[in-house]
Length: 377
Image (cartoon, rainbow, N blue to C red; front, side, top):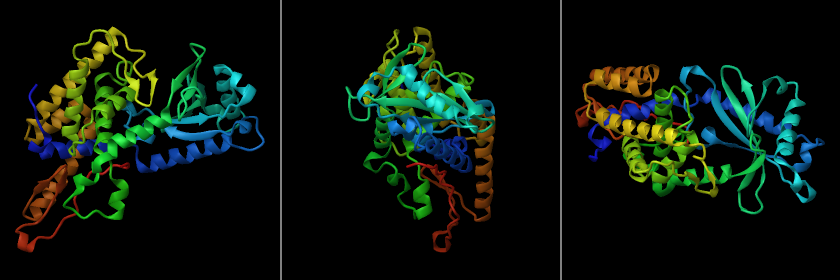
């Protein structure tokens, strides 16, 4: 497979990075989600209740915690996740998975606010907020055998405990995304304001967003062959510190093909912070083959995309890969900045974002650049 780099086509890299901003949870909706999550935590932590004796610890996990939220296909709700960790001690250690699950469920059911929103899932309890998002609350208990931040969570179908470590996984992903100055380096050469710094988003988080969105478009929202946590794990493990979003994505896809390309039987994808948890435990030969086909096709599509220089052709390719609405929005934004640049007599790209600067240098004055920032370092 030929080696290609996005640096040869900064127009495409800028547009692809802009796609990730269009996909993520809007700030107003994220704020609403965090406020509702705080309300759930306050209810579960209310003193004097049966649950309070177990000192519930509530923290977020999944895409909101990882900074990889993606606008759902067909305008369904965002999927946001919480963990409700109960400290079981003494005789309470004998509590069954079903008993732990029911303990959290019944406390939520006591609330007239949450009762009509409740839905039982296999491992979590869902609160459905119509047309916006749903909160999945995962009951958990400490895993004293494995130690650290490892936990056990109930599996209602199998009526057993399953090992996990959502807190440890999130911390691992943070390290993978930000180690070695991988965020700050990509903004060298421009003045970074305090506001910019709060909005910077690591390249790895953008890569995961793109992988999730391409999966949703290809499989029409079906995650059976490519769960979000599988994509997040593989991207985190294979990310090699590239500064440009498109370079990093291509590198990750190549690494997956190199590692799994010769497999017929599905390999495990282990939680790097709890090797007893296999994120790909539901893979079959069929779904694993579908996953590998998705990866190979995505890799080929990226190579095709980076060969394009005509904006109409780039627009058509982005629509096919990531959806019409998102692609059209980012191209329109670029078109507006190109028109503004014409009025200033120059257009110049620098790095992964559009930088519009008037020329000649002696009379230059800077036009605010679209840095396509996200919301998490």
